Length: 78
Image 1 (cartoon, rainbow, N blue to C red):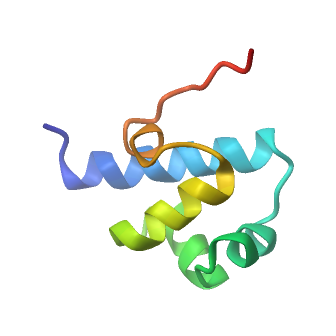
Image 2 (spheres, helix red, strand yellow):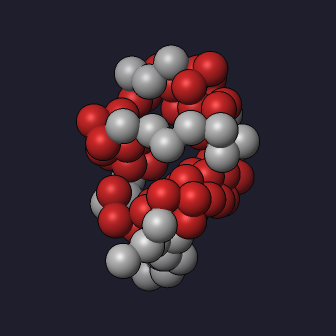
Image 3 (cartoon, helix red, strand yellow):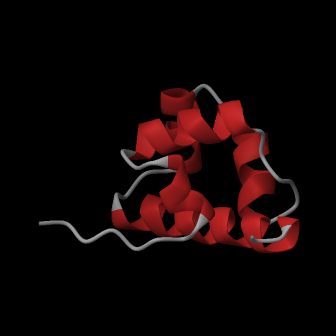
């Protein structure tokens, strides 16, 4: 079982990596996910543990599963 701090770090690292890989801005992610940009910014700075509904919307906007974000899985594009 992973701890809250590890979860917060994994999500921040995963989302940050995916934003770079997909060349998406925080603003664009906010529009696509319906999550306010300041919350995304706080999440990326590991300042908050985002709620499950917002995390699901972010994952969908990035085209990944929530678990990929929580466990910081690297997805291999085929």
